[in-house]
Image 1 (spheres, rainbow, N blue to C red):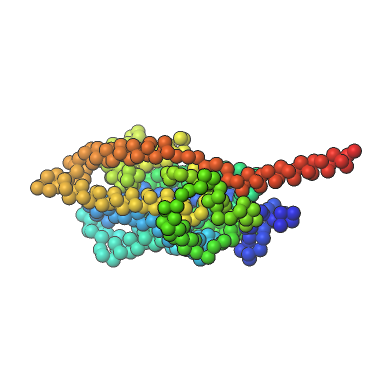
Image 2: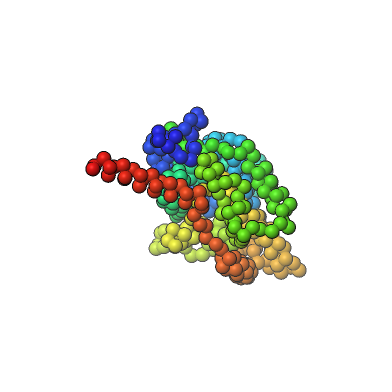
Amino acid sequence: MEEKGYTQDGTVNLRKQPVLSSKTGKWKACAFLVGYEAFERMAFYGVASNLVVYLTTQLHEDTVASVRNVNNWSGAVWMTPIFGAYIADSYLGRFWTFTVSSLIYVLGMVLLTLAVSIKFLKPTCNNGICNKASTSQIAFFYTSLYIIAIGAGGTKPNISTFGADQFDDFNPDEKRLKVSFFNWWMFSSFLGALVATLGLVYIQENLGWGLGYGIPTVGLILSLLIFYIGTPMYRHKVRKTKSPTRDFFRVVRAAVANRHRELPQDPAVLHEFVLQHYVDSGKRQVYHTPNFSTIWAQVNTLFVKQGTTLDRHLGSSFQLPAASLGSFVTLSMLISSPEDMQSLGTTFFTSGIGVGNFLNSFLVTMVDKVTSMDGKKSWIGKNLNDSHLDYYYGFLFLISVLNLGAFVWASKKYIYKRESNVEAKIESLEMMECKTLEGVTLGLQV
């Protein structure tokens, strides 16, 4: 296979045929993916960054309800990737799961754009007095939002891992290129978020919500068309197991059953196959190690709502949108990322954010109820100037200190991943082949 120029990791095309290393994968394929990520992040943050403002100013929800609804939606967006990853790893594969999910994502964006653009889908206002949104208007708006959440569930965990599939880990040059890919991947992700928080939110508040949602919708559609143009260049991983989930639970069951057995002195004997099996099959040999190793939810909710009460004027005519304050988070990440990534593995990060959003929804509700007992003013009231967000942020500060302490403790226990025996053996074999070729060349010259 290698002599004919095929990839060494067993990747194939859509027709399940081996692919040539020179004509597929690498940056010639990943360039299409990086562009999609920038537009998808622009679409997501174009909605998420200013959603609390839309709910309070256009649908006329109160502060606590709007924060809770934004958190519940954000939690769903970050939790649904678990199901999308499972479907990809167990049934459809990353490419087809992404394909179906991206169409659902676009449908949700189109419906959301209609929800903020068409008159009868929005609450009406007469002489400065605005009616609350009707049941049907609320239902249409939130249906659109949760369709986006379903679509994100299939796109988020699969597009980055699909990008990782474009680089052959058994080729040292391509393996080095994969590191560069993830750097540019994160850069494009933050760039899309930055455009949304600085540009789209301004358009939404000053030129119209329909235009502010319509621009990222069109951009998302164009990026998908570009993505599918690159289809002939893509590499696809061959599924090596029928049910990854079943294998996962088999490991847990075996670990529990063998919990009383003594570990061998040499960790290498813990592998169930000999070294050559991993080289021939292309499977990864996991290195043994004896160790394992809420605040984010505020950025798109209370931070934005609090920002509406600030003096945000720059000069006499320009006012910075409240949601643009979130761009400082993105900028700090740009200024200041996985070897082989499987789809289910990626979701541990996204699901963590999702759980944080759900917990924040619960936290906001409980803080509001507890602090408003006995006729007291709530820390998170309708009038933020008359509330005590400073107390609430102080409470979050204490949680952050505890979280930091846990992180420092865990980081001291962290052990960096070493090069596996499989990769070391492959590189050793390559070096031996090169020396053999050099000897043959010298013989011919003599």
